[in-house]
Image 1 (cartoon, rainbow, N blue to C red):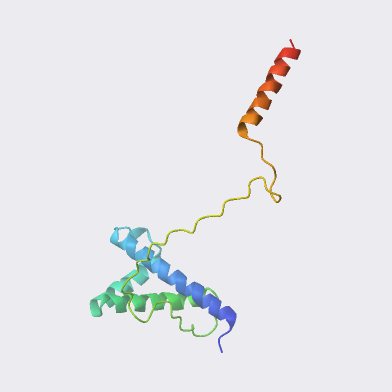
Image 2 (spheres, helix red, strand yellow):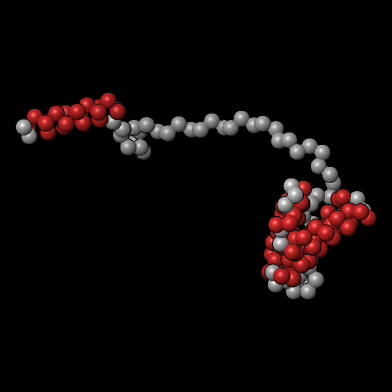
Length: 140
């Protein structure tokens, strides 16, 4: 029986394996594989060996599965890692989202019974001018 804690560890390990593999693969494409940790270089070497034997999707899935198992054990998972189905079974044909116009925002109540009464900006400015002139006049 799989415990909830092991399932959480499995999900985190799977996510980490997928993101690390994508990052490491991009670093290798950009000729930066020498700066990767030894573990990453080991997984990339096994990926390249699998790539010579099988097609790219199978090699990618196998390498991610190996990384997932290693991360699961490293994160404290017990026993064999549970099977995580993170990807869809059928291929995605269209990932374009239709544009939807945002719904209009409601205008706020101005001055009504529920809102505070608001003073116009010109009235506030006029009051500030009167106060300024009053200070200048009385303190001379």
